[in-house]
Length: 454
Image 1: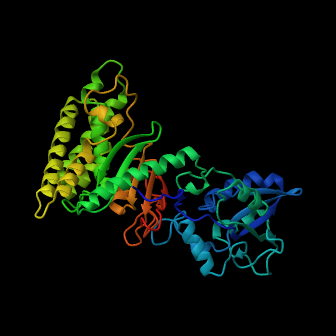
Image 2: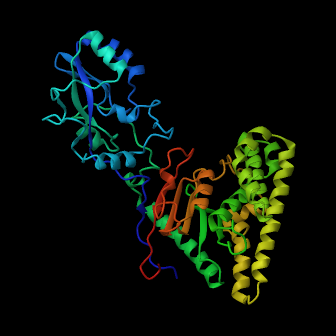
């Protein structure tokens, strides 16, 4: 029996920001100059990294206009990038830099601070402005002063209202995948998470009893609460056969059975069916190459999956390639399972585990998925792109390779039980889901096991 599984704990991509006030140069201006200053300052001093701030606020009968950061020399360069050509600092890095410079939550960071926390008239020193901004100020005879504004964008409406007292901001709803701790799960969702994680635990236990790594991955369609694919770790037979990698390949094969290549030419077919055949063909080709030992070629096939789908969409060659690649991948997995089964010292439990690994990667699925192995449903609906909208349940936190494979698969959520402080990519050692440069982000949750189970 699986151990007790606790309630889900969100693993946010970054910690919630606290209020840090940034000193910026600002000016009082007549309302008639508002449009002129906005137009001139946009190219001269863009609010790079501070897009949550409004440039102008009304103060009595006049306007107050933000010019630039007081520490603009430290951020001078090419439109928000660092002088070394790197990407702008993340919110966490900016917070650490502010704390290293003596700034603290709720305190101004810069040369001077206002008494009321919003603005001050300066310290008698000549304003240090960029040349282009200084020209604008001199042209209109303006007197710069220091205004304090929120450094970070608010992520809750409460923060938006509170921080807006210092300077007006624009509200942008945060990305739910980056801030899962703000999402309140229903009791039904929590129960479903715990049930599917129990399935992963049972698969991993069987695999561990057979002398293999005790880890498993279960991919679920949350809309139908149905298991799409499941696989156990077989990395002892091949370095790429981690549980998550095998489950993603199994999901592609399941989609080939539900939306076969000929389905694209049948009545009532959709464009998504042709796309599915091409994408699954690329994924199957990658799996076959990986089993053959061509690791770099497999990686290239995965990276080119989307391009192949676009170039070859609707081609008859793709339909043939899809079936060939799936058959090759299936044969290779059977060979890997046979190697595990035929290893020295193998026992009956080892044989059962080897069969389970092969079946778990392709055919040993619940009834909803097994039906696709034979005759496809009359109307399976539109085919999702890869694993879009699906959830992955893993007993152990995925490594960087597996976490990236799950990114490429377009999963909605990744849920795991046991963190890995040395190799974990989703909170243990790294936070891959915090990389904003990725073209997809999923929410990450942890279901803690009872102490005895860990």
